[in-house]
Image (cartoon, rainbow, N blue to C red; front, side, top):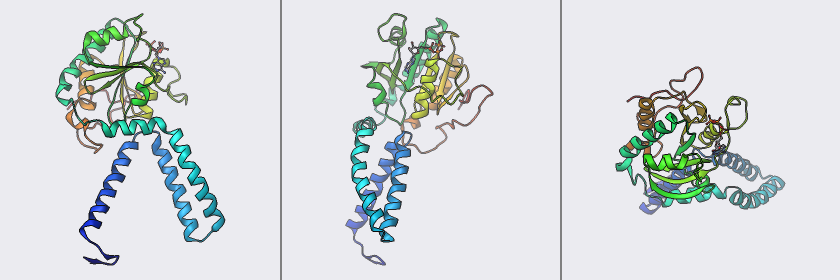
Length: 279
Ligand SMILES: Nc1ncnc2c1ncn2[C@@H]1O[C@H](COP(=O)(O)OP(=O)(O)OP(=O)(O)O)[C@@H](O)[C@H]1O
């Protein structure tokens, strides 16, 4: 087919479609991770380099070209955890246990209630689109179905893995005793202890839904998008879990849709996560 760019055949169209698909998948892999800002930086860098080429500025082109070559190796070293997580994500079947999610939701919520009743501190991150393999790697790798007795046993005082956070993927516990990143100390959450700040910190860097049970207050809260929500009762917790995680749509790619709640909605004075996204 003749076009302003010359002859275009079916193979060219297929080529363009595949590249578009790969670029989009690449975007999905970094979306929600700290690598997003780096990708933006790289694009600015590439833009300046292209401008230097077009304007025929040899010294700048040479310097940026050299810096780019070294930079690629530096990026691989710096972002090794993200690259590993991205590859893990590519290899993982999507929505593999959505069918089991109803039971997982109930068990998770019940376990949270029981832990809160007994004032046993707990920290649980539920993976959504951003892979949490990097954080799972800081703890002990597990592969167990979410169940009330199992979660209670993990967080029981004096249990070997009670310190640190648990990571859940769908209806499976994949790691315990994990170290989460502490919330950046901008002062907003200074009055909270490290368990809560670890929950906020992880939710700041990833799109995970992070549940916290306070040992001191026996409260249940959710951290999402770098914000800590209000105290929840069992019903509210179930509603939030259903809307944020255990909805079929939550396992799909990040199209903003009716079942993907807006973390900006429904803030209260003390806390910023929606109290109850009731569907
Ligand atoms: N970076 C971290 N990643 C995961 N877990 C952490 C991290 N930092 C602290 N914790 C957990 O939090 C516990 C300490 O909680 P701390 O009392 O300081 O926090 P808190 O927010 O006041 O919680 P609580 O209300 O339950 O007392 C540790 O024993 C550990 O289990």
